[in-house]
Amino acid sequence: MALPPDPASSPPPSATPPTQPATLVALFLGFLSIGMMSFGGGLAAWIRREVVQRRGWMDDPQFLTGYALSQLVPGATNVNLAVFIGAQLRGVPGALATLAGLMLLPVALILLAGGMYLRVQGAPGYGWVAPMLAGMGAVAIGLNLATGVRLARRNLRGIAAGMVTLATTVGIAVLQISLLKVLLVMLPVSLGLSLWRGRA
Amino acid sequence: MVPVLLRLALLFGGLSLLAFGGGAGVIPDMQRITVDRYHWLTAPEFLAFFAISRAAPGPGSLIVVLIGQKVAGLAGAAVAVLAMFGPTCVLVYAVARVWHRAGGAAWRLHVERALAPIAIGLTFATGLTLLRGTEHGWVAYAVTVVSAGLLSFTELNPLVALAGGAVTLVLAGG
Image (cartoon, rainbow over all chains, first blue to last red; front, side, top):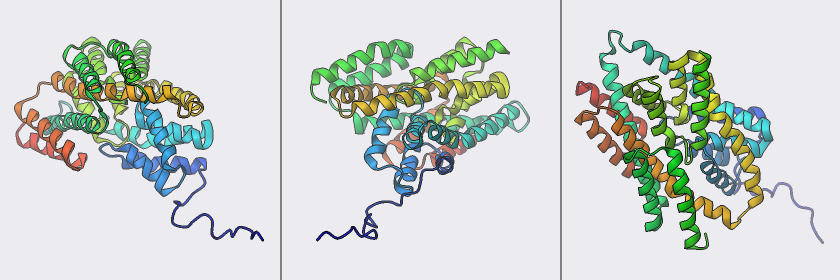
């Protein structure tokens, strides 16, 4: 005799994260907090924490598909990811809610910071602002190069892929060829190499 | 005013559609066009804006807000944001639908595999181009090298590194 399913036993209490309804307000507030926490980069890690772990709106495979897709489409990866997640959960209104949540506070903050910078520029007391920003700029370049190193260590497989990376770097940074021309050459080359290597 | 806003829209809208592998890839072109061609800002200003946009929360592409603000005030900032993020947001929405239908198709995996090494090259090119576009003293070069090493191979918080770099150059007197 089949027993009716016990509502208390499903879902398993510890295996699934708490699932909260993805209302437009919840989407907006969730991404508002993501936008504020993402000091110094690492936005994707914050998005995963909020969307997968804390709110249970998506599972990991869904999140990773969205992440790969967001890198594939041009534009800021994390902004794309926010739009993807909002669109998956609540369509166009959801995408607008996550986008607005992610961008609102950072845009306001950066306008304030930029306004302050433009005001103190050349004013008395500016003496220490210039070296401070130069120091932050020097580290920002270091952070950029370090991101390249980390990505290369995790994602570059084989000499051919390494050559594509090197050619792209040299073409833009050393030979100063425009991005569009470099992409027009490197995209077909890299795609050809992938096809030549066989099954993805 | 209007021609400047139109120029901002065309520039950032065009660059955003080329920003494969994230917003950082277009920084070299952005620097070349805004500093060298249009003379909207100087190279040190560009680096300062880059540093501010990296230190602030949110996507690094928000540097366009600062450039727009410098060029045409709040209207410039608004146009810059819409141009930089509008077209790509529409695109990601459209591609998300196509992507779902593609499932685990072979062409999809090939495209993912082909884009990865290019995106990594764009990341390196951005750092090197910025390094070249600014008149770095040896202290600044040392800060860049040390922070690149620390951030590559340790779990140092980038904010701590940014503060450390700022303090170092202030103490070194620029």
